[in-house]
Amino acid sequence: MVTRTPLITATVAALLVGCGSGGGSASSSQAGASTTPAPVTTPYSPSIDPANFGRPIDNPYLPLRPGTVFRYRGVGDNGKTREFNKVTVTHRKKRILGIDAVVVLDEVFASGKPEERTFDWYAQDKEGNVWYLGEDSSNFEHGRWVKDDGSWQAGVGNGQPGIIMLAHPHRGDAYRQEYSPGHAVDQAEVLGGGGAARTPYRVFKRTLLTLEYSTIDKQYELKWHARGVGVIKEQAVTKSKELSRLVAIKR
Image 1 (cartoon, one colour):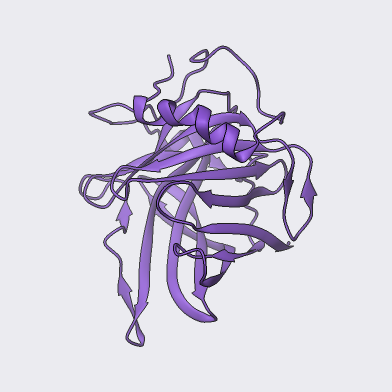
Image 2 (tube, rainbow, N blue to C red; image 1 turned 180 degrees about the horizontal axis):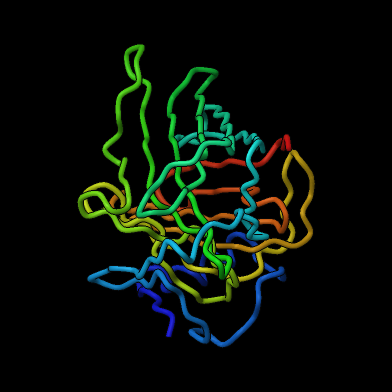
């Protein structure tokens, strides 16, 4: 059975009402009818076989084709500071746990100035699940890049891989995304169809909506995903007022 934590499920109904979630393209099933290889359990130790990886990342809700560049605009935590986010799927690979992970460069600029730079490492298994194998994150401080405490790598220290997008997401599915206690412990739940979503790039009539939660930052975040595109909108729903929407894609 899929594990769902009380902390997430207690918040779902209110969030759906507030964000106007409606019909979408998520598979419908009875809660807990599917399984996930990255369950929200403690202790957590997912089974990873390098032979089960190696295919391109072509999950319909998170396709990461090398050379693709996604651009997002929005506001930061205070709801006022203008932010620009550039996500580049590079042609680089990083070997982690015997898996050649795709390197994705995520850059954040606040009011036109560099703020964050992260190298994320992803890989897709044969079933179509997209795994998250860690990140090398830095903040721009006093004219130089400073490594962030949230950096971690699967197989190093207490780092364990998680899933960033399921192969077949069903409403109620919960899964770990990041697991490195002291650095990053994130999990997500599939809320189902997110209805239509408007972005500067275009209007998406059908979306998949997920809710993410960081046990370290105590932060909830909603994410809308569109088939063939990936993440099109992100919105914090607790103390932060952060909002980001897709404005352009270069393939």
